[in-house]
Image (cartoon, rainbow over all chains, first blue to last red; front, side):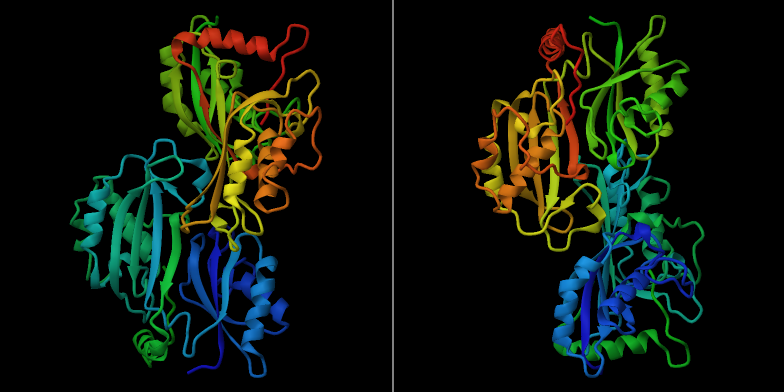
Length: 285
Length: 285
């Protein structure tokens, strides 16, 4: 169990950031660095935040969730009120705080999360909209969306996704993919936007961009519908799977259980992700 | 009447351009300069294009239309084929050619146009989507959309819009506003996008951004619904009307009459916009 925490819901344009965290380099602009810097200026003390999904460089978020510990002697409600008023005006235009609240007891942005939902957006329009090119990937050739949707459905379930992950020492690549759907939808031009939505308990490094890369190969007719699922439960990364560029990807939402079972969920997730003999692993989409 | 012409339909992100034309300055990047430069490289001869709507610096387009004369000895169909194949790959990412075609006889991108349709996008969400901030203006405080829509409806018709225009010597500010509607619609977050759509035979300089500026003052409750229409048919610019920033504005579409009456429309428009004793005027939204 933890003391009082604040929960912050964030959105950001990933283009201007070298990802959520810079992994040791202090000269790069990161979401974590930018956010902690402003929090420290407003709270006048050191701040460390923990996030639900450590997005890669260039990946966007509309539904990132972070927590921040309230120190002994601080009033959680007063802190939330102060940050709710002042943080939105302090932050730069590419980093938006959607909500600041006192978190329920036992909340942990990372370990209490039960799923992360990402959407990758593409367009196969011959002349893609230049106004959305920062978050929609243009691809040449029409995409067979029903084929992509069928190929994605075959990936759902508990599997070893090693074929779609950058391997990390001591980190499991076994994940439960809850949803993987592809749909054609209308953008402001009236069409030609293709959205791939994936939801899982967690994602390993580059997993979403690899899954969608495999589906795009299906959508272009380069691979059969059965191909992505045929790579499941193999031991290592499949070199044939293309990793799509980060700018089409958005962390849209993070799911948490009801307040009463938060602490139980955190204990379960820590046990799963942190085997006692190994250092903590970091998830990256 | 003119010889053969090509019609090009364009979209661009206005952020990287100092407007359609630089008005004498050659050191600024403009849509016209970028387009003519690439056309000259592909056609290996000087090129001058004429557009339907001379957008200001920072204003975007999804439906800009331009024409380009075919020279004696050139084959119009072959030229259209060449540009249709090579221009999309040559142009930078913020300038997209949607279509290249041989224009019908008598076509003139500027003088044959019977209306221009612009949409200005705003959001009154407390935490606006950072991914669309390049083409959606964030405003503080909730907007009363029905009041904005009613105020806009009262502007429709043939009026002197001098109160909403930057005055230019010898240029008329009498225009026919065909539509002015405000609606709340859903963006990818699921709400809070406000679109103001205006359509007129033509617009004078800064007119759309001034009209929408007046409507936003109504939407925020700073002015009554009757205020924008009360400024119609006054002789000069109304200093109280705010001119909104350019990045919320998109030239969405240009309307042309049926092919058979193009030449008659061009003659009519030239007579209206170019009184014989004055130099040609340029329209700017």
